Length: 308
Image 1 (cartoon, helix red, strand yellow):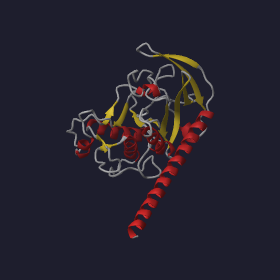
Image 2 (image 1 turned 120 degrees about the vertical axis):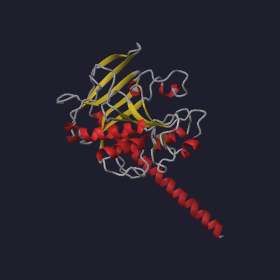
Image 3 (image 1 turned 120 degrees about the horizontal axis):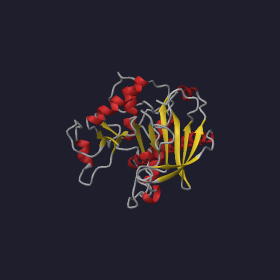
Image 4 (image 1 turned 30 degrees about the horizontal axis):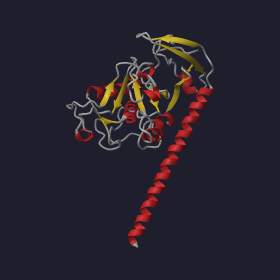
């Protein structure tokens, strides 16, 4: 009888925890979707243009300027565009690009769970139309168990960890080929939808400190962290890398031990939704593909004193 009671209590605890986690995830997704809807509703239908890329590909875009109504939006004097709106790319130094869509759309069930609870990816724009990011896709001859055991002292030769992209792949219409397993779901784009975030009221010095931390771990060949909140020395997962980079940027003397609470108001494992919902971030752009047109909602440039 005691064994049965213990089992019942155990399953009851598991059930309660599962329901609690689901409800928290549901609540976060509702809030994120509302934030995106509100941002889109502030946008107006702007011009439709054809963008030409260096490889000869063309892309039809519709721009939707969004009025800056909040004080932190008005205080930010930077444009969203890498150079000008006539040029294909968006993203300035320190901008956080995030997507809820998982990288495994072909794996039914896992894709839905990851997209719902964790999100797909997050990357930090380095200001030069590239991204510094934590990536975790080992090669076929690399063992996740071996990566977990590695001390991440910069001597490893694994393919996973903090890396710098060669391009602004989020904006390219030719990221993947037709043979890619994700092509039937995302087409040739990296993702069909993504959000661009900025940190409230951050100055140039703190941005530089953030990027200094990110570059340091790029140069040290830090590893990907498959254990998330454990074994965090020189190991990062994708959203954790963003949170810890900004923790250093916002408070240079802060400890780099354990998982961070920066840009993560619930204080646990940092997810894409945590970054979007943080009281310290705000949406500066939202991009989605609809009916063959890439719609770009962005905080308007009009009235800005600087595009730097």
